[in-house]
Length: 131
Image (cartoon, rainbow, N blue to C red; front, side, top):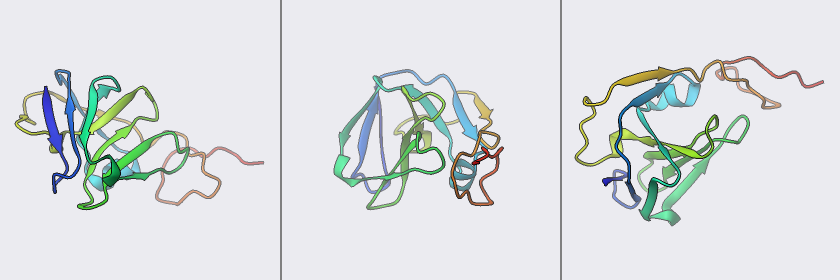
């Protein structure tokens, strides 16, 4: 069991899975927040405290659900757009976890399709025609 929390400790969770790989993503949100993520199935992640402190952020297709602690502002995890039955967990929030142990794989998010009707210029990726 791997335990984790946000900076203030208000949001706490545990992962019942070995982490064999970490990922980075080059989408505009992950690049700006410097995310280093562990992909875990929804059944392996358990929120143990602080559900009321979670703030949801969504953009573009609104399929991915990014959760932050409303008290300290730390990104703790997100439900993945490309794999909605999995979470990307902020590996930097994990306790007693050696970040250098698993390999890190770069994933491509910048070229995912932008489907928002009014996308910001800083959101890369091909645009879906609205017409």
